[in-house]
Image (cartoon, rainbow, N blue to C red; front, side):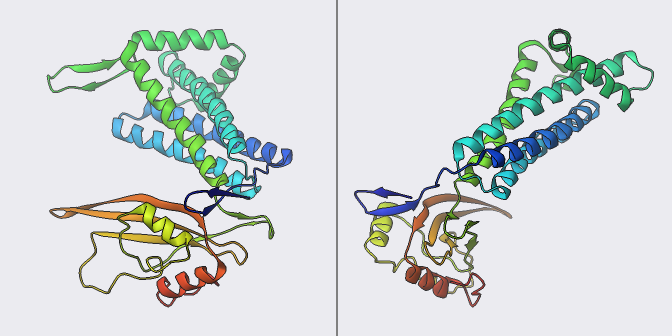
Length: 308
């Protein structure tokens, strides 16, 4: 069940790869149905909204929702196969993106040809017709691309019209964002620690107290592999000033095979603003139950809700 590093003798969590057909089908159905509904709403809102920044927020909102839906199914139905989870995400994306286009084209047609541009029943009817006429839908996509249907103001005072290659680039970027979130989130979810003994996901908890910033990640991992966990159980000294560099620890406190993830955190301050960046030092490293107890005792800050 574990992937061992022969040099440092580190053991990491490795998913079992289990994914029952029933779990895959249920997750796929839920993701596709919910994603289709959200994509139809997105297409309608995207066309009628005049603010480009709000459209960008709508895009990322849909992308996050697609990823969340699939990852929810992965977790709910105990899928521990990352490739199966990613495949579900791809299918959900393809169906959702196709539905988005059907409703986007229908919204354009109603806007151009009907008296009432917000006639939702008519939009649904047209989308259903286009579903049976893929060639006709493709002709509409090409027409929209050639003519362009939206523009933004430029610094020169003239509007920048989106059509042709420029509009194609926007569409490709939109598809890339949706595909990325649809695949990455369920992939990550399926790879999280899972206890095959208890049949449950191992909940991770970020411990309240941080540790010193890990300058040499290889040395840190080798020390831990030899049982020297001093750096892992030594909290930062108390200070009135917020540390600009530190590491935070996420403990997966399973009673049989606990794991730990350590992330370096860098805080950069510029005037009144500050930015925070994180970099994983080690992810899902197997530790002994006794070490997990030491880590929790040292970094929990009086909170022992993890039960370690």
